[in-house]
Length: 429
Image 1 (cartoon, rainbow, N blue to C red):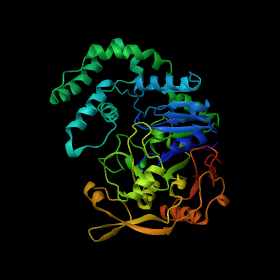
Image 2 (tube, one colour):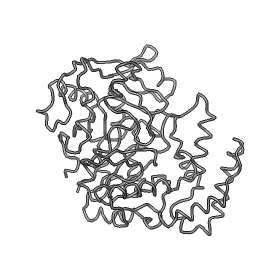
Image 3 (tube, helix red, strand yellow):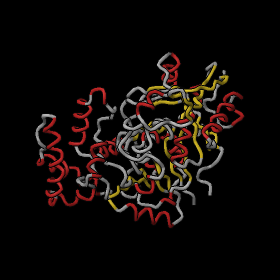
Image 4 (cartoon, rainbow, N blue to C red):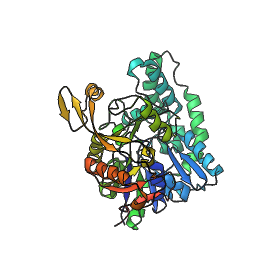
């Protein structure tokens, strides 16, 4: 059976939650393969609204949901999220939920370091969520992380703590902070360990068994390609690889397992936090997009910056991530505009570019080249077939897929699961 990998093809917040939920209802397993609890998915199922930041979206429908080794896990945030969802009637147990035992942990000291750095950065602020994601990934690649499997061996943790604290104590001293309270850290880990360990296992083995049985696996990305630590708007990026290829390394399955790559693309552009944004609109139009699109972060509540659709960025994201087809979301936010614009290229120092440059100064200085199209007065909200869409909205969608050189697989016309126009089924063999 075909597998599907879902990624955001912009700066995140493209409406992945609804799409992943829809696909998860038809999958046999859903896997989160990167990121931490800095990414949020909002699922609307009937009258019930679920807000997830760590748990894979399949958990709501009882689908086997797995947190892969590519994720950095805050065990206390996980416990709070599980308890919240259980309070909403969601069943979470060892049958439908598993955590990779080689998954690195986000510790309280990581959040502290995140905050200290941002506060001291001045104009160099990255705009992190302050949840310790970056410092946790740093400790992972620095080979000093405490991982899920270590929770079963806390009495033998001293050598790892020596490495961890040698690093963090030096950094904390530079900020005028006291050394890490090792006893308090161990005590906190002992308290949370039983909760986490009940779900811990070598998930690569479980996934391999699922795959051999011919089951459908859905790989669920967090953030977006433009926040990828290699391919995004560096340094205003997240601390992990968000591209589809990470599904292989972040889950323990090989690259052939990723299957159909579905890029989630908003019909306009948004981003949260600092960094370049060529099509940003700091005027009434940008405000209108934000208000109509309810552009506030699921996890942070931060207001998102808004602008016209940037076909250059999305084309680049689709190429880098090997996107098979896109899911276009929030077309209804553009309802009622007299004119709509699409960025088709950039001007930089007298030259025209058909790609987004790598250097931060060039990224900040590019000027968008726009193509203007007629808007539409009818509504696209709730449409479930092409016949339900205004003619100009169809022209807009067709132009988008031409410019990004990637076909539209489906169009989402509201947060409701059924309000979807299916062009190509990603799970089709």
